[in-house]
Structure formats: structure tokens, C-alpha cells
Image (cartoon, rainbow, N blue to C red):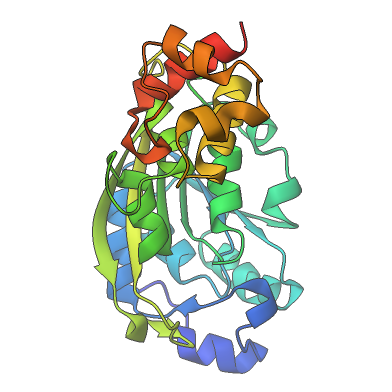
Length: 275
């Protein structure tokens, strides 16, 4: 990638950027890999990146033709390294120093944006839930291309009656489609994490797969999976003393367990419980 910028290892050494465990940082240094992620995320005019660190993926997105990248980084140590990239790509990189979790992302962009990120492990799921539960749908983003721990990635795409199927599976699959694109070896990172990572692509559906209010679906899935080994008539008692009657009204078996229900089943429960 001939952008006139020094190799990432040199950038990290020059700015003293040892990855911080407290920020969930694992820097991605393999530029072939960052190009592969950037290609998977594109094509697109505007990209939003969270936790760019020293800027490996940022550089790849710009090199692959992103017209504009908005990068949010809460680690002040990384800002000078990102400013070097901004200077190499004039007018195309906007750096925001701050916490993506507390940022009102939707107001930053006029049109649809593609989100691409090697998410810090400690906030990855929280950020995904934030983007999946925005009020307006279809959302402000047209796709998410994100790096997760392999185990989290498996939860996003899991089907009912499988080991990884849970609340996150339902929330994702209710209004989006998710696909694991490829795994990333631990050796691609500095420092190497203890687990394998996976790149996942998520695209919003125009309409949810079944009618329900988001808040109701969140409450039903939280109750059902909060005690996933129990039958529904037991686990959903926290929502209503008449749980069994309401489960029957949704056309479901009160002795079933949460992990056997489809996304549409959960939507049916959400409609009945909160009508």
C-alpha cells in the first residue's frame, strides 16, 4: 500500500503505542488483511470507523477508495498517528476523539454510511446492540463489517436449537442478515489475543422478519434467555403471572425452552405479552 506512510510497526514505535488492555485494544498490523477487510466493507462513499488505533484499517479504507472516513478514537495517544494519515489523504479523514458508545452517531451523517471496524473486544457487543436498536429503521448505516471474537460472531448467525443461539441472535436476525466472512488468526494482531477473531458483515432488512415493538422484543428475549434452561412458562413469569396463558395465545408450547424458538416466535410472544 504505497501511501507514503511508514509501516505500522514504525508508527507504533514512534508514538509509543503499546496496546492497552483496559481499552480492549489489539492492533491489526497485517496490511494485506486490512485491505481484505476494507474490500469486504466496500464499495462506499462514507465510512465510519470505531477504534482505529494506529490506523491500519483506516489506511486500507482510504487506499481502497473511500471518499470519506470518520474515525472515532478514545485513546488520545493514537490521535497523532491518525493525523499523519489525514495529512496523506487531504480532506478525506475526519478524526473524532471520543467514546463511540456515548456518541450520537446517527446525527453525524447525512446519508447512509458503511461502518467498518476492528472493534475493541470490551465494547464490541454493546456497540452492535446500539446500532441494531436505533429508533429509525432502515437505519443510518447501510452495512456493518466488524471484527468480533469468534464466539460472538457465532452467536450473531446461530440458528434455533444450536449451542450459540441466544438473545443476540434474535436481536440481529429480527431486522438484519448476518454472515461470517472469514476468520482472522491471532498472529495478525499486536499483542496477539488469546482467541480467534472473525469478520462479520451485517446488512439491515427493510422490514423486520415479523411484526413486534423493539422494546417488547428486548424484554421478552431478556426474560426467556435469562433463565434459558427453564421452560417458558417459568422463565416468562417475571413478565406476567399469567405467562402460560399468554404463551398459548402466541400459539406456542409453554413447556418449550427459549433456545428452541424462532425469531418469529419471539416476535409473537412480544406482541402478546405487551398488548
